Length: 217
Image (cartoon, rainbow, N blue to C red; front, top):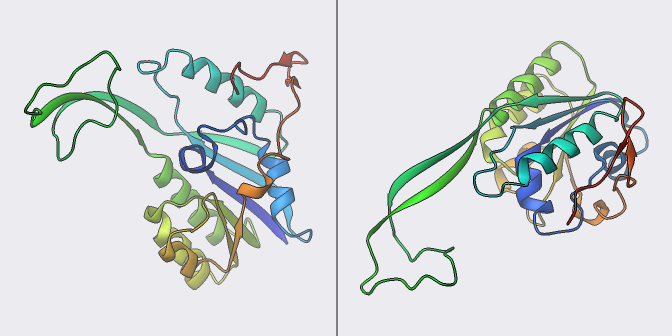
């Protein structure tokens, strides 16, 4: 079956990769390991945004290196939303979860605090629109989506119920969102395949130069 895979990059990172040594992930190897052999993967669409270095100065460089590695995969296309980092004065419904160890909070605790808030915008919309477009244009016989974002329920519903095409949810969590699970034709877990689906280090780039895995990955 002609298959296109749609990857919610930030959801994949925060649900399955952050804090692990599996970040150097070969998406094509992962999809081949998880999907049945009759799925002919003709394309992978990776949705992300270029991140800010305000919180972690090394993050943009590390991401750039990984995106270069992904470009070596045949049939993979990268689609970018926007990454926003803003200062917001917010009401504290509970104590701050993260603070420097040297800081002693006043008593009583403040009700408001100025916090740095990071948000990714546009990737889920891009993924949903492209998924529906490709289904209606007959670009695939079967779709696979890596996400646990319930904002994508309606695009999944359109593909399965309106376009009458099979869709596999490749879940990055042990218990996928019930609303996504009910809509998908099939559900497969990816976490058990992350360790065996890593790029070599280094990867040979499209320019013939080595791409070295970021330190700490």
